[in-house]
Image (cartoon, rainbow, N blue to C red):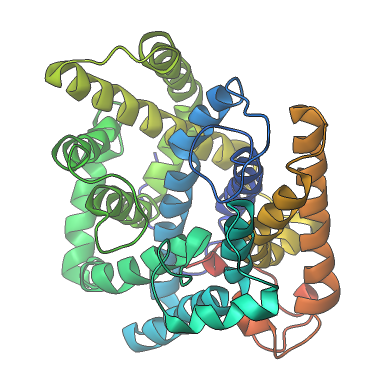
Length: 396
């Protein structure tokens, strides 16, 4: 296997494809949340338990994949920027869209949720000033909702910056190369599962996932580990080569472990003992890691190329991510009582969500320079032909 490090100029089109795939699935997943029994902001009149089965599968790796890719993006970004410039760009590309989203994009979601619950909130113009009371949701009307990912990536970027800066130094590089030489092999690569499992075993029993940053320690630590893993995996071509070579093996293991999860846990929860829960978490984390290795391996082998769709989607995906859930919640509120089947509603809502996101992106966001930074895009860059988007421009 090759042992050379990826340089800051390396074009990781495989990661770009995975990023686009992950956000497409995220939009479909959030549309599905309208139809299942799990908590969501608005709900359909008819709940579909069968839909929960494939959504459990997606839930295993959709966000972990994004955190892994975001960590990879930091590796490339730090190769071309000083720590100061990197920090400034984090604030510009993460904090600005997050603040804009919390004040403009998210409030309609809370408004429609309150309407469906029968609260008397008046018109949207009557309701909107409540946002500026800055009382946290759900008691109040101030939240980041689906934009929690931006807040976490922003915190992770600054929290891990000293470590990442050291690993890019000469001394850190030598240590990282020695670690890579050991881990980038067929069996040791699964040692990455152990810290994930320890995090789950120690923290999950006490902290449910809340996405509120301050009391979300299980999800926080688990996601931070994946963020750091992304940096490490992108530090050396050995990992990319290994994952490509192992892709069929890791896919087979992923299928075996997810089948075991369905058979012994997900279809009918057995209420396991403490030992049984520890085994469940190990099986779940092994399954997650196998899917991540398989996805990255197949992408490396078959998607290491660019085309016009990828160049377009690589920029469009950030505005799509910011916009999509507000559109889903609004559509859900108005379609909840329609006497359509679940499949029909799911397809209609998904298509309309993608269509509205595309119209707003294509004809408004990308063409009005002053709007672009609020959606994480570079100011004044109207077309991708002027600067091709690369994996270093991942949502960071």
